[in-house]
Each structure stands twice: as C-alpha cells, then as structure tokens.
Image (cartoon, rainbow, N blue to C red):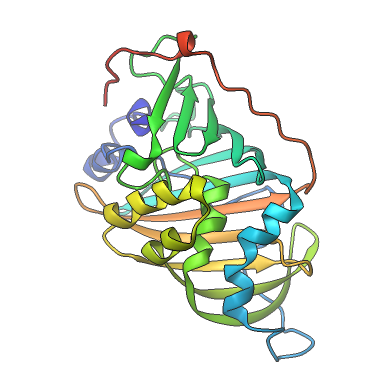
Length: 285
C-alpha cells in the first residue's frame, strides 16, 4: 500500500532494498530519535520489589489512558530485512475516549537525501484508516480509506505507524511480564516492564472499536507472541511502548514499532473527509 510510494535509488540499497520496499502495505519507521524518548536502558530502582502485579498493571494501561482522555503522540517504526533498513516517523494526537486520532507521517528521504513524498496525513478511527497524499495515482486532493479489519496486519504496520490506540490495546494480552526498574521517558519518571503479548488474547479483551483490527492481525502475523517494552508513569498511564513484530511477506521482515505519549489532556480534533473527497478509483500497489 503506502510503502510503494517510496522508491530508493539503485545502488546502495541493492536487491535487499528493493525486496523490502515491495512488502505488501508496510511502512518502516526509525526508533524514536530526537523526540525526547528514553533510550530504554533502565536505572536501578530504589526498591527492587515490583510495585503490584506487573502483568495486571500493563494489561490495565489502555483503561488508564481512556480515563485520561487524550494525549499527543510520536510514533516510530523500523523495518529491516536482508541488512537493509527503512525508517519513518509520525506525530499527532489521539482521543482515547472517542477512539480517534490523527498523525502526520513523514516518509524517509531517498538515497541522495532528497525527500520523494510529502508527509501523509492519517486519520485513525474504529475500523478504518484514512490517508491523504498517499500517492500511487491518487489525486492530491483525495483521501484513501482502508478497512483495517480487512488488513492482514490490522494496521499495526500498514500505515507506517502503529495506531497508538492499538498499541495500548495490544497490551491487554500481556503475559510473562517482568518489572525491570525505574527510568525516565521524556523527563518523566516511569516504571519499565518487559514481556510478551498475545495478539489473539489481546483481541478478545480489546475495546469494541479496536477488536476487529486486532482479530485481523492475529490471523495475519506469523507469530501471535509479540515482545514488548512498556513504560508506565506513577498514575499507570502508558508513556512509551515498543513492540517487535515479525511480518512475513516475500520473506521475513522484522519490525520495531515505538509509540511515545505525552501532553495528556491536550484536545484532539479529528474531522473525517466528506464522501466526495474519498478516492473511488483503483489504488496501485
């Protein structure tokens, strides 16, 4: 899908780069660099005993965000295969109560350092992803609408940024969770947890607006078990989460997706495009 709008120059990327860029609808994203996120290395906690049940705390992170209301978000994803990496970043906001969000996704420059595509505006709503400046023959003033319940990855990878709502809901399937220790994320004291989450289990426990997309992802990924690192603040709110997916499409693709949440309570406005602005023609892959 969107990834086909980015074409790297021949030469350095080589055959591995072309194979990576041909992957279904996946977009690759760099791990949050320069956005204030922590490196992931935790400092030793003042008390080595985990505060409460680590698994229960992580599984409850989505509910804590819903109680908060809204937040600003920065996303990052890195996709690697055959020694080649493609990266992209996103920034925007999400309303956890209305289950809606908006991101501006920045595609990487080509091998010469020149940008090849304008940023893609993405609207995230239950069961759908809207994209503008998608390219591939789509007029500049038109939007593309994708049914996320019909995507093989449930839009955990497709849009080049994991939907922050889905990233949090995915933790409802957390298991084998361990408490790593205290550290800081963007200047905020947080507790670091590590474990795996089961996509199918998360789907069964997910909020209605996210359930269909996670059910699709449970069928589309080669592995149901997804390793994660989650960072919760003292109020149990998710501040940062990093998921590591394995995606099979013309080979095995390793995807690291990171979501950073901050500015809790910041109003988020999402206005869906009128039906006349949605492109009805064939979308090139």
